[in-house]
Length: 254
Image (cartoon, rainbow, N blue to C red; front, side, top):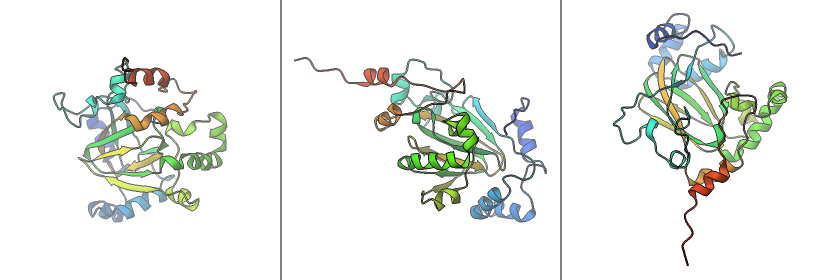
């Protein structure tokens, strides 16, 4: 269950994230964090996912930490095909950056992006993020497995995985011969996810990340077959016929 907390400053959130209640324990885990023993940290996360004080996640916050005059790799000013083809310039988190403040055990559930878009994530500072991902070509098998794992959620919304609050251990997928790749993203590094590629993960401590969506030509077929959640008001929808019309090069005159 996800609960919304009252607004906090970044300083207040950092103090909470680093408090004894939310920081790493026992001492052996603190030692693993200092030694960057990522395998041990990962095991501790899954072992204690349902125990202890629930973590907090400052997610989906409008804003960007990139300088406005930064012309390359600025997530708030990517100017990709998606940005050039859509008139609505202000779609937070899709056409502009979203900020995310994490803490130990704060997770982002298994999901694909709205309209099956690509995404790019950058950790500005703080602890690493641990990512899992599956191939876009295995998305159907991931969805079938998730439906079997969470039948009530699927009954309430056929696109419940887009709610981003469901976790599935990678070992569960691998037992069904669904390959799962994983990486640890440290401060100063980017992670890019592919169209209709399921991804999820967790934060290893207090950090700040920024993310947005983008598109290229290879995304168009994935966007054309994208489903969407009907029970959330902020679901992003793109009229692909209109986008394709704008993107199509002009027919040369005879």
